[in-house]
Length: 439
Image 1: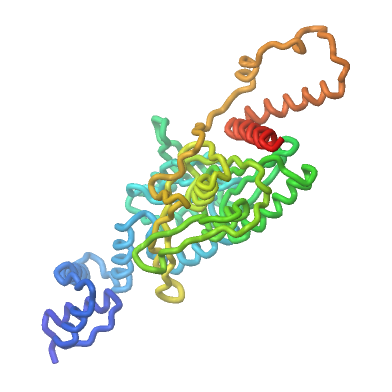
Image 2: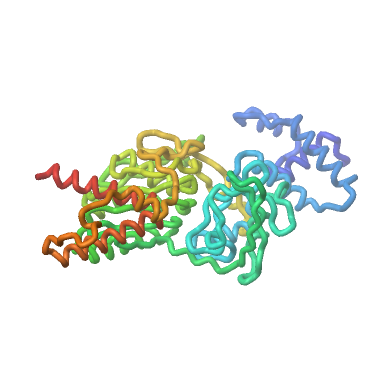
């Protein structure tokens, strides 16, 4: 039996949308009455006609699979920068990305106005060593303009065989001309947690990315710092600068490590599954010792969850510049064994109800990333008796030597990382204030 034009439209829609349709006016009427929203038939008819015109008239033959996959990509790209269709290669890369080892340059990227925006370079990777900064806009990959590429296409071009070179052309705020960086690809092994003692009793923890093992590595790092400092820490600097995020469960576990109770983060979306609350369990790894969190514009997603939770519970003071503002939840919805949708399904909210999305976390103390030279520090240090030639000693030579060593360390930290230097000073002040409160 020949099909009418309307029947052909219905068949096409069924193929495009993946819906099983039974032909006949009664069945279609029942579907329309039972659905909360009717299908937009006029718009779908236009889609069907475009599909048919391409099949008939495009200069080259395009198979149905390619047309439909590109249509799906277009739908998702039009929603927001984070929703995407994951073909087999992209789906595989997503699963590899949370394991802590993969090939490429070592940057977290997103799409903005058709170009690739660097969210943050990952620590100790080719991109960071080459000088790529958070906020850089990638406009060319080798000789190919980025405009018009999908994010997954751009990522695939940047990844490649370790040892091969890639040329990135970048637009950077404050620079009049585009910058060019030749970067050698490598196997990226991300060490999620680093630690060191800044001064006696004061520890430093750096989380470069939130991975499945981050929380357990954090606990080990804290224990190591305690052991180095006589079993107890007076305070801790938690460095989340240029941390692009990662696994949600890791952010919750890291926050929980410092909180005794209360909400860590909650999500709100349209369906019931997207409405979730995550709460802290008892036990504070630092037993109440003060925390200063360092953030900047490259701190995103999971970093913002940790910063917002500890800030709202008054468990930490956040220092630095406003964070990236990536406060949306992406759910992976498998379509086949090898393909999936990455769909934005909810927004994150801090314990006090602040939305992170497009706002970010505003630091308690705003501090821009600046560099201070050793000469600048010497200019502002006043002349003391100890600076005078042939000054009289106070009889405590050992302590004089120790004070001199500490001064060199402080000057070195100030010139190496001024925000960290200020964070340490703040941490020491908090520790002193807390100790005096209980006298």
